[in-house]
Length: 95
Image 1 (cartoon, rainbow, N blue to C red):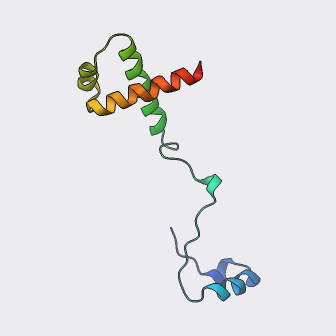
Image 2 (image 1 turned 180 degrees about the vertical axis):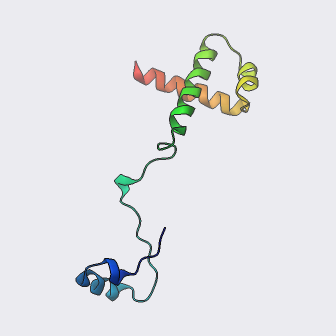
Image 3 (image 1 turned 30 degrees about the horizontal axis):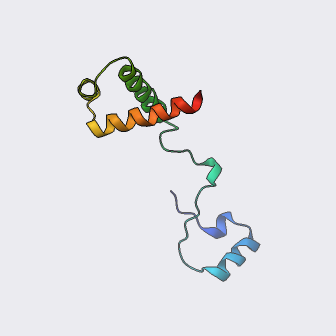
């Protein structure tokens, strides 16, 4: 995030209007909501985790036990169980 001087980038009328609200202070202006990516969307992490979770559910459905999945994926029992329940719920809604 870079610092910009308002008088260098804003139209004079807008600068004058902003000065009525805040003058001589630093203000943060966030990006537009539609330009902000969700967690893990830009670097592929979200898709990687979704693929892993789908694989965990598939292995569970095909007979793998929770302790086997804990050992294979290095996740806690609670995490494995949450993945199974959530992925099962997603599979039900897709059919």
